Amino acid sequence: MILSHKHRFIFLKTAKTGGTSTELALSPVCGPDDILAPLSRPEERKRKESPARNYALGIGKLGIRLPGEFRHHFPQVYGYYNHMPAGQVRRLAGEDVWRDYFKFTIERNPWDRQVSFYFWRTRHSKPQPDFRTFLMSPRHRGKAFRSARMKNWLTYTIDDRIAVDRVIRYEELEDGLATVCAELGIAEPVSLPGAKGHTRKDVRHYRDFYDDETRDLIATWYAREIEAFGFTF
Image 1 (tube, rainbow, N blue to C red):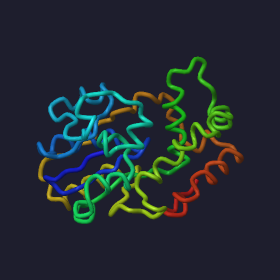
Image 2: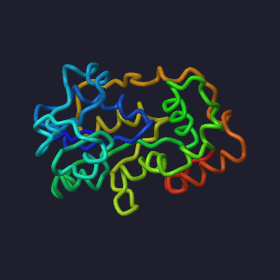
Image 3: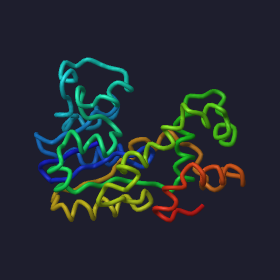
Image 4: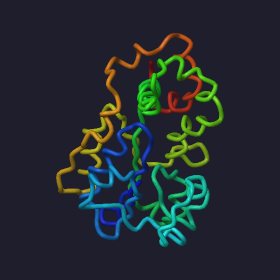
């Protein structure tokens, strides 16, 4: 998540959509007063010349590491964080900033994104379950993963309505980001690194992972995104 006063934009980071690569690309053009939510340690090392900054509030300034659940429920006493939803950003940034700054995010075809999520979640599993087994498992279908499935929609909506000015499609990310930068007057070159592409070795098309049942399951889980953006299998 980035809030740039220098360029007057707010980037809301969704999951498995190239969000980390986008943050790494945008960080060098941000100013000293801009807010850059922290990434993982390996990703912070990649942007060591323009690291996370100005995100801490209250006890967050003391450097105390708190459980994610606490940080996410009480950002007003901890500060900005990765994948922070629109409603919380608006409350912390203030109505004037939220209204006047250009807000954008990224979304991805949910059938494609679920395959990416599968490889990410099982990257250390030995043996690695096949896609159907993972998708149909009680754990994945249960409460523990429900928030992960819904996270993107909740990131860029407020009261179930899209709250950003632009949603870039993942498959058009490079051109979409270039267009946004041009509209914002960012003159510095912005290039996307492949921040997490190494976690996936199987490069088959996402359709090859599905049968009829799992295809329909995704259609049910992500019905709002599919309707809003016209995604198709």
